[in-house]
Image (cartoon, rainbow, N blue to C red; front, side, top):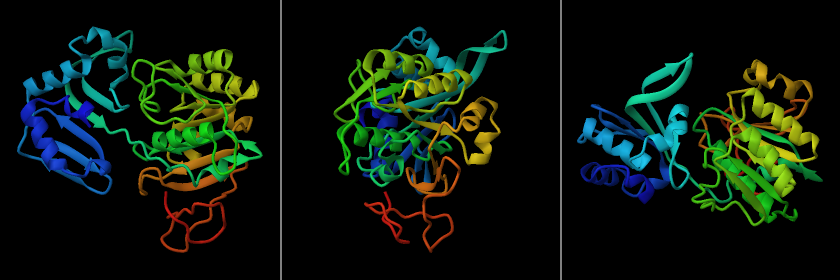
Length: 325
């Protein structure tokens, strides 16, 4: 986690490292708010580091480390409200917003930082694979609120598809990684395992990246993270019409919420997706709550235990008890 620890001044770095100890694998976020205690969010709890209260000097240190002493170089990212660092970790920022013509021009006086830890979980998508493959890979939308493991799941699914798994031949996969979170690419080279037959268009807007990959790399399967606006949907539908299978993620809580969003109306009207995989914030990150087919029939059999709790097995079966991913 050196790429994260380098962001903090020495004293702060040591205190955070000591507080986390050997629990890095369970850490989700480090939240820094100037003049407030540091907040550490783990999978099952949150803790406060009250011995260190970051002030303006610590905030400026963070900003300089994030921008490598050049905020101008990161102007576009700052407008989006986040910066992706080496390792695919995403640092959200907040402060005073400067607008021009009702659009965000910049964020100044940055006083809030949310460092989201990117985790590579090999095997996380193994149990999902039988649901998204039937003679061929199916157009699939992975749905979930923030921090439910959408990127973790789609990253491992990419690896499985591109390397071959469960007697399924490896396919050519094209990844449009606009925020550099899926592959954690550094100078164009992914640092997460995305499989043997994967090509990545890094730090490229999704709509443009999809068309570029189709023209240049002829993928069998296209992977895209966090679609949502009108341009994304138009490019996605264009890609599907070329014969490419699409697997992507989107922010959302349930199917009803997605259907209320005007930009998504075309994908429901034309039944673009064959599978909908829903992640639940009440479950552990990456743990699937429900899977629907194109007609919204539920495919995932629930456990006889706690309501809405799903257990997974390593094979596709209809037993009531399954192992978790």
